[in-house]
Structure formats: structure tokens, C-alpha cells
Image 1 (tube, one colour):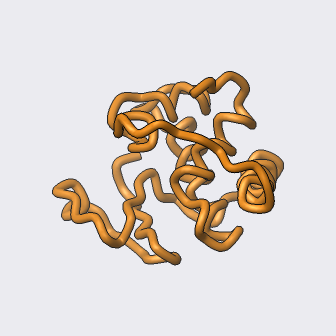
Image 2 (tube, rainbow, N blue to C red):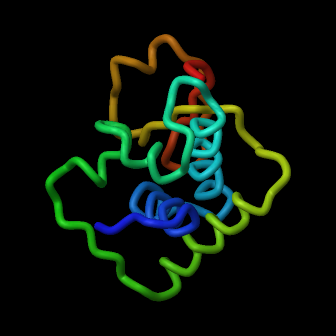
Length: 124
């Protein structure tokens, strides 16, 4: 998958990580990425943060990633655009996980559920 410019990188990550979510929850995924960009613990660009090893499963799961262009993709692009244009973020989280996945690292963080994801503060 070709990830070149920041807006495309953000839209692709939102699409593969949260395409079935409401727009507001998709934006939270984008905000997590932006919070990581702002953190000293992660890379300092959107695309680099997304490409970091073992951070976003869609890049490292050995499953071919294909975008189905249409309304679902368009909503992910809208979410990415809204995040990039927003002057404030609705979450301080730097981590999130799907509710169906149990992660060892979540025990040290406080989480709040939005849709099918739990967003965790801490670790920024």
C-alpha cells in the first residue's frame, strides 16, 4: 500500500482501522494518530507514525489491503480532513484497541469506549 502524503496516510489508516464506525469515532482514531505525532515517543509525521512497526495492524497482518472506493471511503476521507483542519481534539488518547481484542498493554492505561474501540490515555 502506497502511503505518501499526510492526508492520504490519515484517511487510509482511518479506513482500515475504523471504517465501520460513526464519523465522530473515526475522527478519534485520526486524533490518536495526531496525538502520537505530537508525542516525543513516536515519529513526528503522520505517515511515519502509521508506518511504525506493529502499531497499525492493517499494515503488518499480511492481508492484502484494498480500498473499496465509495461512501465508506469518502467518510474516512472526511474524517481525516476534519481532524487535519480541527484546532482542537476530542481525545488525549495515544492508544486504542478494538473491543474484541485483549491486549496486555491496556492494563496500565485508563480507557473509554467509543463504538467498537476503547481509547486509552497514557503512554504519550
